[in-house]
Amino acid sequence: MTSAFDPTTLNRLLQLAGPDFAGELLRRLHDDLTTVANRMTADATDCAVVQAQCHVLIALAGTAGAPDLHADADRLHQLALDRDTAGMAALLPAVVRATHDLIRAIAGASPP
Image (spheres, rainbow, N blue to C red):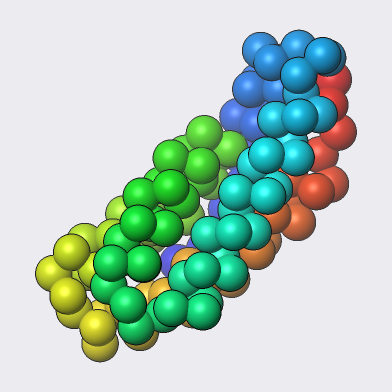
């Protein structure tokens, strides 16, 4: 897994949000991604928690322009659905790291 991030996707989203809402959008993305990372870390063996947080992460990663994270969150979601705790344990640390990478990228973004 890589933590590829395409700032073009996020910049387009911020432009669509416009100057009045772009800052709020960045704050919400940052807060939601932080919550996801924290909950997945705190409850790494709880399939229901990981599944629910992956559901959120799949949407956020795709929206923000992190296709690799999106794909890995989708895989982790399926592992949680399958109750494959060994597979979850293998993939979850990389997903959390990539989520933190995306959080840092969003923190460095500026509204248009």
